[in-house]
Length: 173
Image 1 (cartoon, helix red, strand yellow):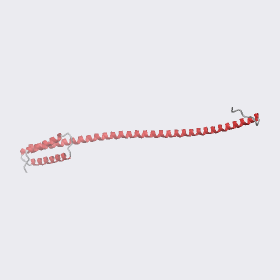
Image 2 (cartoon, rainbow, N blue to C red):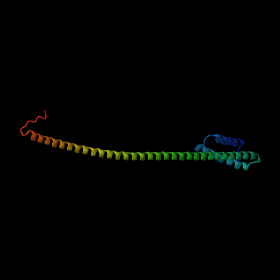
Image 3 (cartoon, rainbow, N blue to C red):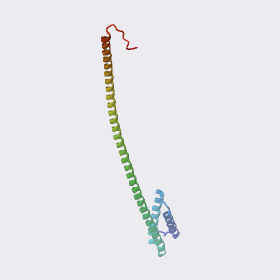
Image 4 (tube, one colour):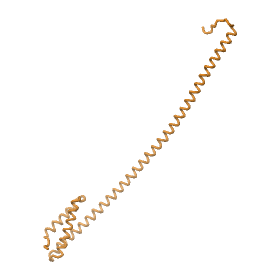
């Protein structure tokens, strides 16, 4: 096999450095390209191992690029894990906050139901009082009407006894 040129190794190394400088994680296609480049670099390293001693510098350079790439990817993984851990903490805090809000809503609903039950009891007691009052008022009106009739009858009987049976009633004048 022919050993790759130093410019090919340098071009691949430049692409790897450029990818590490990207501020975000690579997309699926970029990730596949990075894996392909790593495979290509490994192939180059294997070829350089069989090449003349002048390729030793290229092999060391390729190995260094691979080490830097691995270190960079490990740092990215650690950063992602830390972000995921942070997101989990945020999600846990939000869940706890939502749970507290739900408990507060349930407590308010329970309090409202107790108040509604108490109001219904007071309204029922008030209705009973009003019914008792109306019954008492009706009984008093009947008693008053009976007493009034009894008094009129008694007055008429006493007049007729005092004035006599043929007397003219002048009390209404």
